[in-house]
Each structure stands twice: as C-alpha cells, then as structure tokens.
Length: 196
View 1 (cartoon, rainbow, N blue to C red):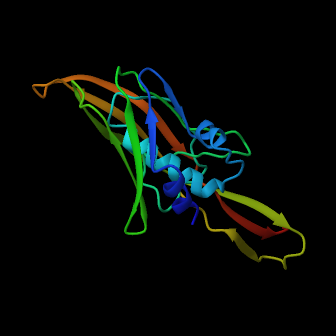
View 2 (cartoon, helix red, strand yellow; view 1 turned 30 degrees about the vertical axis):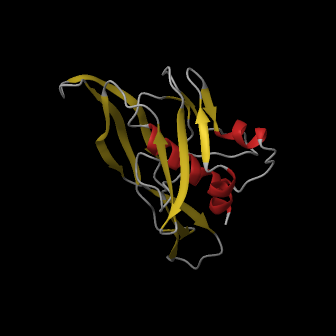
C-alpha cells in the first residue's frame, strides 16, 4: 500500500537541468514525515536502477546489510527517513527529465523520460564472488558433555563490481566507469559446544 501511495502522490517527478534529485527532500517538500524503510528502499532501488544506464551522477546511495530477496544484485539502494539515509542523483544535462512511477503486475516500475543522450550507457556487473562463511565456536556450560547445537547455519556473503559503459553514436566504447563495489558480508555459522 505504501508503494501505491508513492505512485499516487509522486506519479511524475521533474528533475530540472543541472539540479539534484533527493528522495528524502522530495518527501519532505511534500510534507511526508514518515515512510516505512522497506518501501522507501524499494523505491530508491527502482530509481537507482532506472538512472544507472544514463549519464546521471549518483551522489548518495546506501547498501543493505543483506541483499533483499526482491531486489536484483547491483540495484540495491537503502533509504530511511529516521536514519537520514538518502538516495541522491544529479542531472548534469541542459534538459529537464521526468521520473514516472506506475504499478504494473503488482510491481513498481519507474521510467525516465526526456531528450535522448548523445551517447548510450550500459550497466555491467563483473567480478561477482561468493564470500564463504566461517564457523564461530561458543561454549555453553549448560550443555551436556560432548553435545553441540547449531544456533545459526551460516550464510554466504557476496561481492561484485558494477560498471557503466559509455558508447559513442557509432557504438564504440569510449568509457568504462566503476560506479560501485558492493559487499554483503557473510553471516558466520554459530556452533555452541559443551564445556570440555
């Protein structure tokens, strides 16, 4: 329902030439004082995903501790009013662009509308790696001798690099810019043993 509220209240957002868009400022300007972090992060992720393959400059973006199950790797962005975690992007162009939000098949879709760019931009993920968990051993005097229990089974982490590739009008690659290196730490396995 909060995503629907966003779509109703912010169907179209204009980003003027050479100006910045701030998610928290947009809410504040419209007198929105609170918004659930999960919903706001979903909106921030959708905005991030639509602005990445453009020449917009992402000046503030925060990462989740764990990759949310409904967010694609590389496009995670956290926004939170309480902790002042914002999503901010700069329009470096001489034209106004519009962010349009709608719900299609129960999912939030954001499109960016405005003049086409001189160059084309593509986002690629490279060096994707799994980060293995380790076992952390704890001792519990209440456990019978020789027994152990698993308090947490362990969960692998992830790391990857996201690049923006710029191609000129003939399709020749002219730039490859590292936008972010995302790292989700592993959650270690917790094994509790009896005292020896």
